[in-house]
Image 1 (cartoon, helix red, strand yellow):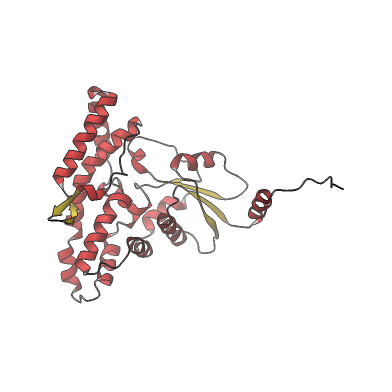
Image 2 (cartoon, helix red, strand yellow):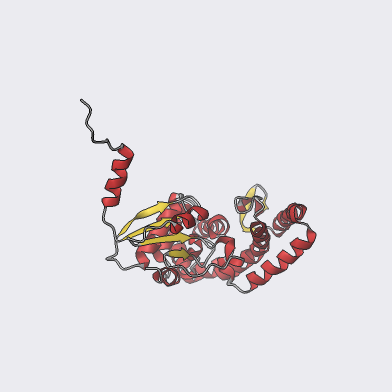
Length: 285
C-alpha cells in the first residue's frame, strides 16, 4: 500500500541538512581553482574575528554568477560575496552594496605582492645562503618589479580595451611564458620587450578590425587615464603574469627549484601584511 506522504529526493534531503548547519558567515567567491580558494580562505581567516565561523567558500565559477547570487541573497543570514576587480576597475563604477566585496586589486593573488613577505620567503628558501643582506640586494625586487610591471602595463592597457568592448578575444589566458626573454634554450625570469610589443600590435590590429580605429583611439586615451590614476601594482594579474615570474626568479636566487608555486603562494598568504585586504573586507561584516 502506497503512503500518501511524498518522498523527499536525496538531493533535497542533502540541501535541507546543509541549510540546517549553523554557521556565522557564508562566503561566495568566483574561483574554483583550489590554490586561489585556499589563499582566499587564509586571508579571510586572518582578517576577521577568530570567533566568527566560516561555513565554507562557495565557488560560483565566475564574476557574473557571484553577482547573480548576491542579487538573490538570503537576507536572513550573514552572507559575503567576493569578486575580483579584474580590469573592470578601470571603467566600471559600482555603488557600495553591503555584502558585495569588490577586491581593490586585480585578483586575490595581487595581495601577495608584499615586498617584506617576498623577502622573507626568499631567505627561507635559500637555506644554504647566510648573507641575507647580500641576497636581498642581489635579488633587487623593487627594480625588477618596476621593469616588468612597466612592460606589462602597456599590454594590460590593450587587454582593458578588449574587456571594455567585450570582444571575446584571448587576453590573460595567453601565457606569460610566451612573453619571456630567452637565452639559448632557456627561459629567463623577465619579460622581453619585443615579444610584448608584438603581442600588443597583434591585439591592436584585431581590436581595430572589430571596433574601428577612431573608437580604439578614444578608448585607449580613456583607459590610459584610468591607469594613471591608480597604483601600478594592482592592475596586472599577479596570478597569471607577475607571480610566475617572481617564483622562478626566487627559485633561481635561492638555488632551490623544488618548491611548488602553489606552496609558495600559500606561504606568502600567511606572511603578508593583512591590513590592505582586511580594510576592504571589514566594512561588509
